[in-house]
Image (cartoon, rainbow, N blue to C red; front, side, top):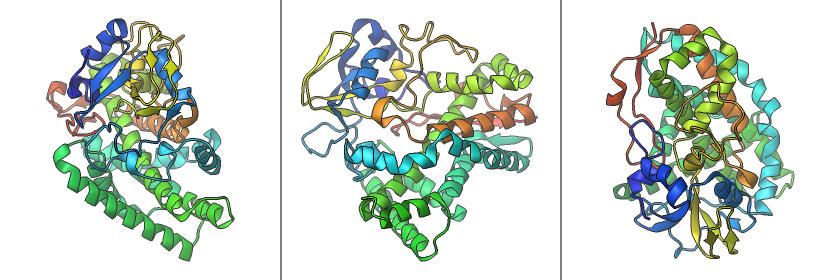
Length: 397
């Protein structure tokens, strides 16, 4: 069974996994799928199968072999060297060790007051209406990553444009994607040099000190780490915030639950992450040793496989009535929105803080929040590796 690129990589207009993927939980838990590049790839949709792939030592993120199928044509995330996303042990373990201290739960909590203050400022700047995408989610997450890393806030618009172009899956935009990547890397190289000349106490300064103190972080690795932290540190979290707001607008009775009981915000964030996730299916893996999955399927060595995170989060074996959005959902297994295993998202704690504070401010300042246009008229991206509203106008009063 082969699904279309739209069914596998986009989703329904409201962002949930397409019916073709939902049906595959029963009929074809591991089967081919066509990627935006046009290449066919095995896709696993079952919760247990996906977890097994993500933790396997034979599941590699090294896709540098040009003969391997790639998600999109031309330059893609798989081509960025020296970053956690594309590394296997022992290099992956080394970089993870260097970075993990900056992304603990304790470290994330230190940023909560700043995050809360930014959400308040953003709503103060509105006049009763706003676009959740450009007036709230993206400014919040980009300002936060600027503060954490020590990036000039005035540069936010530039690196957002570069990130959006680089993450495009449109085959017609191959040249644009390469140009955006080159410009972004040139910017980051200059940013690292500026911090060397005028060191401070930001995360970027910590990474420079780690390199200079002989912690085996090369200059190329340092530049690419910063590139990925900027790109992933604001785009993905912004997607999760705006998809979460969209989901709550579709379920106004649950938004009112949050208005009446803010203690539900943390559980609401987890259900948003399960139901909507980061808006993308996940990262492909190159299987280096033949793998027997819990479903009974065999993935031969040399195969490129996609462990589909969104589909796994809607597996009825793991989440009873997975099609039901329920911010009070309890007693289920942990969602896979942040992945699992060695590549579990390093920034998960900070992303949770940002999502929680974004919702907390909305429910306290806009208890009667409502869409400014019919939700079925909200445009969604069609050319990106992720699926999200392009605009989401809302009325706050």
